Length: 227
Image 1: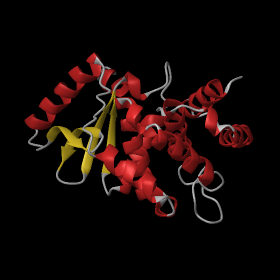
Image 2: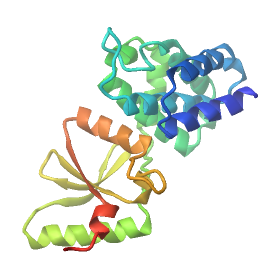
Image 3: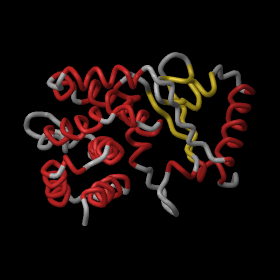
């Protein structure tokens, strides 16, 4: 398996919320050892996947109070970001979006990891932050559901704002200053399950750390017929 395939396998396992720390440890050490073989796309994807692991294991910290994998693999994160920085002129919009999430998560959830980062990596984050990249993860039926819920809120006099932009996120609905209502369409769940995806959990982690209360309305529940 070449190093690009290894990076893809790591990212896929993280996205699927597969819990296998020993395997992750082995792969991360190998990626660190072979970092010079990685391109910026794979390196950024690995750094982002490390966030997904941490978000899926929210609340499970080491004795030092740092989330896995940052408690053991801080050097791997720095090396992946170093590869990205060396090739930053070639970054795609999805990679910039991932960098924006990485910076937000590190600053909010593991600030010591961010503070110990080399200045050139912080500078890369600052440049990525200036790029307007918002991922709209709606599907058509989720969008229809969003409109219907917004109409119901209006009917009962619940003032809200729809499609509020916040950094790399688009918040479905915001009530007041600190309550976020997320309309969870099919893309928020693993196929044929009620289990939310790692990226959905990551968004929750970041919003909660920013002081928001996040409420979810899932499409499965909205579709259920009234008794």
